[in-house]
Amino acid sequence: MSNRHILAVVMMASFLTPFSGSALILSLPGMGREFQVGAETLSWVIEIYLITSLAFLLPMGRAADRWGKVLVFELGNFLFMLFSFLPVLFDSFALLLLARGLQGLGSSMIFATSTSILADAYPGKNRGKAMGWMVSVVYAGLSFGPVIGGFMNDGLGWRSLFWFMAFYAGLVLLVALRGLGPKGHQPRPPQGAMPKISLRLFTENREFSLSCLTAMLNYSATFAISFLLSLYLQSVLGISAKMTGFILLTQPVIMMVLSPLTGALSDHKPASLLCSIGMGIITLGLLMLAVLVGKQALWPVIPSIMGIGVGFAFFAAPNNNAIMSSLPREYYNMASSLLSTMRMSGQVLSMALVTVILSLNWPELSPGELLTRNIVISFVFFSVLCFAGVIPSLLRGKSSKGLYR
Image (tube, rainbow, N blue to C red; front, side):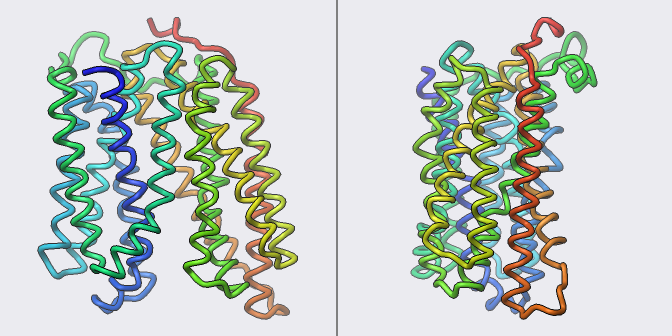
């Protein structure tokens, strides 16, 4: 299979999980009405998927070392397809949660191997460009999830989304089985130089360790942006959900368009420079949002969101490229797993921080003023966190591959 075909398979798989998450958010009210459960219980439809994915990322990276990354990748798509049928065939909220948890297991197998498969296919100067295309598709999933999911949910019901997930995962599996072939299926012997997670990776490889730290700080500072803006636009300014969706769409669209370009740029420019520029732009965007929310402004929010999209495009693909390029090939599965672990850990931390900040009480304020102030505090805190991430980004050095050969 040519490198372009491998890239196509990885891109197809990379679209599925962000699409399913963003599309399902719009279906939660319908699920709540059907199963007669409240918002707190419904949140587990999203949370159990994230928790399961995070829990199995590193074990699936080790499984890829033992059984082959292609086999684990294909098995992950199979499991995602299989467990997408549970909510369709059975009328039970408990089975819906079980299905989402098992989908998380499947997605952890995809996350743990996809970047590694791509890094194997593009070992040279075109790796950053390939990473950019993969990141672009992730943002495409985030962008089109609410739009397509909204139409499907309104016209066909929330179960239609699970039919779509099952069909799409099955299509990815067929393409992978046909194109990737037997490469990577052969299990490796348990003895010998099979890589393990070692403290030396973090203590002696500065580029790898600081790139991972930078990724976690970045996602901690940025994951909750859409959630906060959704609250601000709808609950404070009274804008409709449909218009809010179109406003929020601008950020991932910018990321989707620019990521292939910044990824290709990372093949020629140091990641420390590109990622630091990106995080600096995001920091300014977050500070601007804090000011605009405090003044209850609307339309100036859009260029701020677009600026954050530009900053994130400068960060994501170059940082992924830096992590994969900082290690020799035998560590790719582990690096892919750790990269996804850092990303999802940052996402969980971001939402936890928002939960704490939004729980702050200011008795002298009305409910609308209270929400506005806490959103402002959140954006200020996240801007400080993002700026702190510039420090490890700048301090990372050149690749230390020789330590592990």
